[in-house]
Length: 451
Image (cartoon, rainbow, N blue to C red; front, top):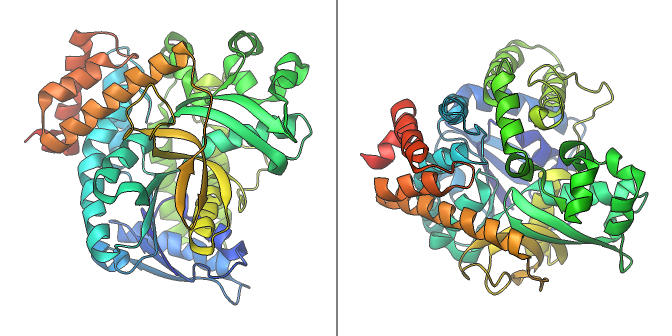
């Protein structure tokens, strides 16, 4: 089977390839096509994958190229993880907002809307190409903002587009592990949108063990215990997705990011430039070690502002091993492909069409909920409806997402201005309009939407 990876020069590609190397099922992916607009990045990533493939006689063959149609033609699965505007666009997403004392973050808040505005037209073009060149393919979307992009692409490809994020499933695994339980025997009751959801129950052999964790001192060992504080988690009675930090502690987050010497985007831009230069010049078997070191530093500084650290200054754990063949989003992606191609039924948390799952949202909205998936497709599980706080926040953010999709597809400045102004982390029409003007002035790909 053929897997096409869009954004094939990106840092996450080795995660997926390692998962494929360990897959012993049949049929399996034996043909991987890496597509990217940057030949140098493709060359660097091909070198990393070639080292990982050493010693694997049946390693999937890798083809790299900059022709999108060649990469897509005949694909069985398309994994999309692209960044329109590159890291230069990301740093503008952050700085335009921060200059107005508003959260500057990649996917949450106004930065995520700017990212969506410039990304949706590109992803819709890809969706139309998939429908023409690979009509039987499933698209596994990791391109951010993942929920918004998945919803836009479903207008072309329907339920053959699934959005994935490793945060909800990772949270569930950490909860089980913190309690000394086997995560594979746990079932998760989770509801939300991408980067905005809540773990409400963790069922282990039928028992909800989440109250046990909330009452335990071990709650402080959980990453979310560090991010939110034990008192707030106990007040809520649930464990929020870590990105809800930017809602619950918005002023603290903005202050911390403003006080830092660099933003996350600026840190990654410098780090990635150094990596690609070094890996191109590297000799022998150092490509993988360079990638591992870079990934460790990235992970150590992830959401630094929420953990009392300074972006770019957190030190990586020397024992860190970025080889998550059966965890993280690579594991989720592999499980999706196995379920569809081999009818290996699985339960996981995905971004899918709502249907009647969350009654407070439109049926064609994309939500992040537990689903079962097999060769027959994806079916959201029946869930307990979210409470008023959860439903209200989901509705407001979903309204903003839909206005952003409309603006990106029609070029409506009115819809874009409404999206920025109505976002709960902006709370000002005046600031919302300044944000839109700032992104148009600073990011050519955003300006092109309104030409």
